[in-house]
Length: 124
Image (cartoon, rainbow, N blue to C red; front, side, top):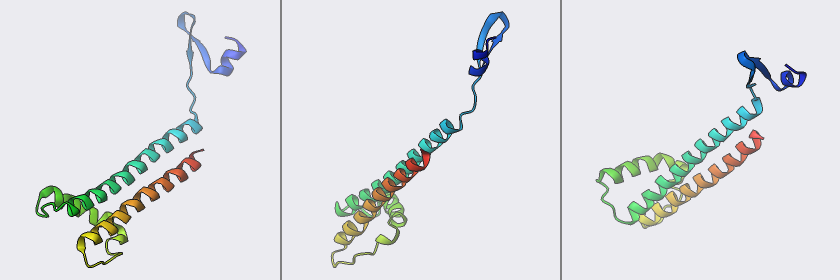
């Protein structure tokens, strides 16, 4: 075995074959973990915004509030709206849904974008 082989992390195995040792690369592992975390954060933010937007569409479209799908979306949209659900209180309740839940959806998209950028900076 030559000096360059030992520096490269290889050694001879029976029959003269060479096997390469895989060393733990902390930087590569950090980048992979950060990439996975970024993907999860992006999916959560996008899903939250989509549920809020769907709630707006179902409400403005006149969906039956007793329907199981409409109820499911409304039940999830309420906590995802955070403090935006009663930010504006116009006379028209449909306008209130459009403004409040629409702004909440935009908030989730912007907050997710900022979080992803911060995570990318940290991962460098």
